[in-house]
View (cartoon, rainbow, N blue to C red):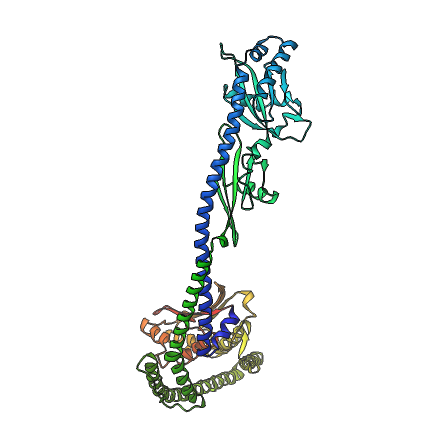
Length: 575
């Protein structure tokens, strides 16, 4: 993205306008297409949702018809005297069982449907009839939640999928069990249980006339496992996973095809009916609608072309002429632009440019004068540094020492002087480590003591890991010199000069403290603003630090008149 921005910024305005125009056309077309497809998607989704709801209602009616047919069978069986007599016997009789089975078989044959019937006694024995029946697993039926659930309904029926394997067959027939408790007519006490197994093929017939490429249906049990379905396996797997979180209505969106899935819990059962319908947006686009869309896009493009022409005529072309005229200034000839322009922003830009040229010429003259003054100031700094007064005074002191002191003391003084100037020169380096700067200060103070005896003491508190950090050379010596000459000496008392260096908040803090006469707030303000002409050395030192680190606020002054003066320098460690 950065490279594209840089490339675009270097283009001429004419090219920029062209690219912006092309981008605007593309964005408009895409926006129109997205808007159109969103509208069509909403429209088709509403239509499909309405159709899916109608299909769901129709399938539910077909399902209820199947259940109603089975319910009619169950009522006849439950009220049959021979069947109830079989159930009331204290001990099962084979004769009663055969008679009851024959009655059930006769009732079942009078109805359409390939059902199988089980009539259970309370002692778990049962009779059965129907094609393909093998057996019922009484352990599953009577010793699990299967029988308990039916018993709690107190004679009401329910539908239970055969997922627990309660019934098995000699064919690959899947079933759904219609189950209800049979109560004694006189006592209303349970005397048995009736189970009518409905083949899953009966459920498939409830939606077979509605299935197609755009629709899909499925019956699911309470665990969202498929009882029967005409959907492909992948679709059904995704739908069942998603319906765990969205149990009623679900929309699975694609780019050009969206699936709308709605579900409904079927009454008196743990069975859910799911309807999947595909929303095909392009099927709702007629020839007339496509013609209108193309016409609208064509009109939009024509309008944008007209806008582009106007921009080029009234903005891009005049700006290009103005830019060509301004190029003459690149040769150093700052002459006013004389291109003819309209009385608009471009014309005013030309006038402002001409006014700017006049101001630039004046500023050039001012900058030349400021540069001359700056060079003179730098010369003054150099001259100030090269003054030999300190050297002369120190040599005079050493000369007196040679007359009165031992030669070891004289030798030590000369060695200190040599060490000071060696470090002072630093082989021409502009930057030296903090440890070297401290060594220069130590030598300087030691030489000053030769002249002023012990009128002051020096103390150092240097953080060990800061010794190798490089700083501009000779930023401490001028400040220590000020402490001696403008702080300690005028006070006429024994004083202390303390140098503390430590790191905090990504900054190295250098503090020069003296117990001299201090400064008034007016004097501090003069130093801070640089208006005090007598503080040339201090000002030059702070300017060097500011320029070196490109920081404005590099120092702070604290002082109390007659007690102390403290200068704190803040240097960024991550410079």
